[in-house]
Length: 146
Image 1 (tube, rainbow, N blue to C red):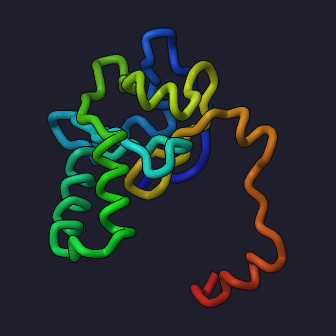
Image 2 (image 1 turned 60 degrees about the horizontal axis):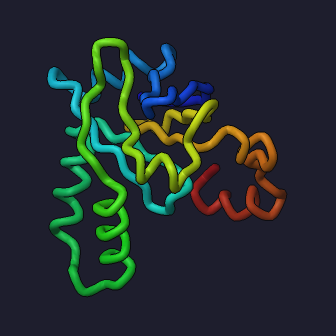
């Protein structure tokens, strides 16, 4: 299970070293081949799926309608921004140039463990506008038992 937050750095070649606190758990989710699917839904956050996790998502998507415009937009977005890749021996992943440019991922980035995936964003976004739950949002979460 991936949880928490860490910072990391994207180097000049677009490689991100997965933070040590996530690396072992993330690699175990990737299984032996250490393959990943790197994509985005909104050109702000980068999603890094272990390939077996992404395949489960694809399988689920394949059972859903192809006539819903929101689902089709999701499929289009994750395909447009998506690329399959590998975790190298140093624990790095390559963020492809189009996605790196759109999300401004260069230098320091925030890395979030989100159960079975990693989410990345420009650290400046969080520094300038950290995630804060208002009393209204907290009240709305009670419907989920949180």
